[in-house]
Amino acid sequence: MEEPKIRVGICDGYPEIRGRFNGRYRSGGMSLEGDFSAHPADGAVALRDAFGREILRGPEIRLAAEREATFTLQGVTIGVRFHWERREEQTFTGELTFLATGGGKVTAINGLPVEAYLASVVSSEMSGEAPFEFLKAHAIASRSWLVAMLRRSGRESLIRHAGADHAQAAEVTADQTGFAGREYAAERTLRRAGEIIRWYDREDHELFDVCADDHCQRYQGITGRAAGQAAEAVRATRGVFLLRDGEICDARYHKACGGLTEDYATCWEEKTVPYLSHVSDAAAPHAPVRTEADAERWVLCCPDVYCHTNDPDLLKKILPAFDRETADFFRWQVGYAREELEGILRAKSGIDFGVLQNIKPLERGPSGRIRRLGVEGSKAAVVVGKELEIRRWLSPSHLMSSAFIVSTERNASGVPSRFTLYGAGWGHGVGLCQIGAAVMAKRGCGAEEILRHYFQGATLVKRY
Image (cartoon, rainbow, N blue to C red):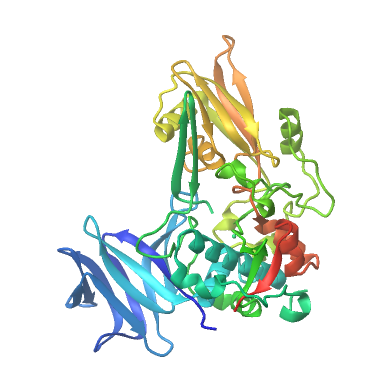
């Protein structure tokens, strides 16, 4: 069965794109090598060589690699709008397409087979030196998320092979396969009197299937893949998916749950997804958070769970370098003077709350993540949700998670002077806990065991 292919948006809507062909690329009868730049040009794209000479022009320029050629793009933005945002030089395999987009911008799209794409995703999301069984588990989760997302988007041309029903499809066992996941972009908003309930799912990109950043899945080229075991993990799990009730699972993942994973509905629409329900990130169960007293005890304790690790050698093997800059992922705190937080709220929500008086959790999920938060000021009072919108309102970038408790210092008149948030975990908390899963693998758990732990009731099936 033919392997599906995918189109990944690397640089979406840039004023110009610079890079280098490492080997020979071909467009029609023209052969290109070396440095290049792509510029908007009267509704088209102009491709120029290292000397600034125009060599190709058109609304779409498609280039195919010869032999083992690769291409490098400079100034690729990663971590868009997150606290680790930066620009990098990245190198890719496969086809390169330039498109002219609105507003005098240019977009670069990488076309390649799904399995080659996944090798980069796994090594971009986590270090290629992570435990091998964890990398295999991540490959299966990433492949499942990708195809489930494309099916929802109606992109049947890409997923017809992977998603087709097979009368003979059998559950994949350890003997058969060698076994022993983002914040999202498209906005959905419910507005009721005094409430703004907003969540973000994956944006349906019109020009390509997925973007290359955290809004879909991290895809940062071949550098990390070359340095580790990610490609081997993808090969070992080729065509294997998570299924529940005959459907490929929307296998979401995050960095660190904080000890308990979260229910799907805390972060997205109000529906129950059985395999995206909360589990304890440990061999022994921990009780879910049900009350504010539970939340305080949970956030202020350090339970014995998988993602609670301070092993620097293991973290170095698990996390890419820029993720290791975030050292307090398990338990964290952020403090604001009242005036500072008033400014952040005004900038992020567009609402002038006046003198901020109270921040009050109103509803939590079982991991302690807040799904409805009351914000009260002298001029306005609003209930905000869901998980990601709360994180955005209370930080210049994003809070680590919405699993936090609030400590308020007040002056002699009872007016708040400072707010301190004590929090747990990194990310939305739904599905696979990446750091927890890596620790499970280090302790001897196989990929299938890891996936069955985080995606309850799901099975592994080989589809191509």
